[in-house]
Amino acid sequence: MTDEAPLRRRDTPEPERDGRPHADSPDPTSGGPEPVPLTAPREGTPRPVETDDELAEVVARMAAGSGPVAVDAERASGYRYTQRAYLVQLRRAGAGTVLIDPMPLDDLRTLDAALAESEWVLHAASQDLACLAELGMKPRRLFDTELAARLAGFERVGLAALTEQLLGYSLEKHHSAADWSTRPLPESWLTYAALDVELLTDLRDHLAAELDRQGKTAWAAEEFAALVASADRPPRVRPDPWRRTSGIHRVRGARAQSRVRALWYARDGVAARRDSAPGRVLPDSAIVAAAEADPKDERTLLAIAGFGGRSVRRLARVWLDALDEARALPDDALPVNQPVEGPPPPHRWAERDPVAAARLARCRAVVVATAEGHNLPPENLISPDFVRRLAWSPPDEVNAQTVGDTLRGFGARSWQVTLLADQLAAVLPEPSTT
Image 1 (cartoon, rainbow, N blue to C red):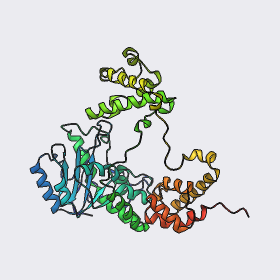
Image 2 (image 1 turned 30 degrees about the vertical axis):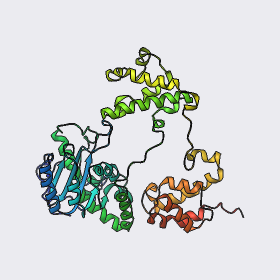
Image 3 (image 1 turned 90 degrees about the horizontal axis):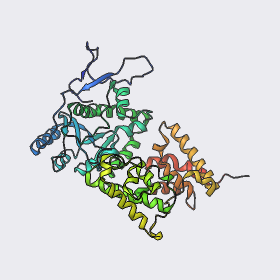
Image 4 (image 1 turned 135 degrees about the vertical axis):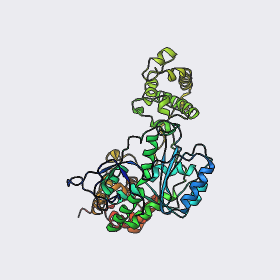
């Protein structure tokens, strides 16, 4: 661990501890000491960096620091259309904690260059890597504390839960769903953001030691390398995204589905122009209700639940035009169900292909038993989608080599193939009846 100043605490008088997170994992059922509420960073809450000169000073500080760098980002999910970062937090031994407001800055490429040789520590890295890449920041090495905790078999892997269990400090998470595009950011929000990186490298040290104890360090290294490789990969564009409208299963018929599609794209256009989350422009429930009712005038439209708000009423003509366009479509322009890539949903296997359904059950049993034997969640041992694809369409010649090659082709890591290929190859063929 790094040699840093002690943390400030709420409790008085000062308990008989040295101010550092304790090394032993507290057991919440043992009647041991209560976790210490962590309410302020060691050096206080820093003011966000907002200018090029301030950024240059931060770059120099971070470059002069030592050891891993804790990194986090705050977005405005549920409030904004984009998933951009509205605050970036960093902490490094010898440099302290830094908060950066990226909105007035062009990018953070100079900071990225200063940290190029450093290991980045993130919690649930896949949530933040894309928005950091938009700012020109991409780790070359990383340690994901959430993923490490999963591999180590922890049941609760949230940052607050792990910090409490492993380090003996409790973090408040009441600003996690805040609108981080708010300016100026309240002081309490900034303190919350700074605390998110306050103990991240300490947590990394504990989890790294636990992975080493369990013989899983190499597994974690493969997982982290895969995250790094995908850090700046553009998100996969879903075909027909309107089909994910909540409640669309209630909409019957291609003509009614065309109304869902038209309203979805109309809403998406408004949301993009406003940089507002689509659900704040018009809820999914309103789209589904309008698709079912097919209103033809403003009065009927505004009587539908979800269309009564002032901002929605102002857009009545937009919604009616979308419905008019859907109504005017010829039959050959109506939505059709697209063929699904890969196997069907598992609940249909027994009807579609009972042999494949039995094969999937055997494969799943292998995965569950192997995961239990190695104290990790089955979904972290292997992607359930990989298992389904293998069971639905196994290689022509089934053996450990062909099964391993198939899994690697799906994207499985070497450690996963090593643990599973032999066992899956053994259960893929139908059991002998003799």
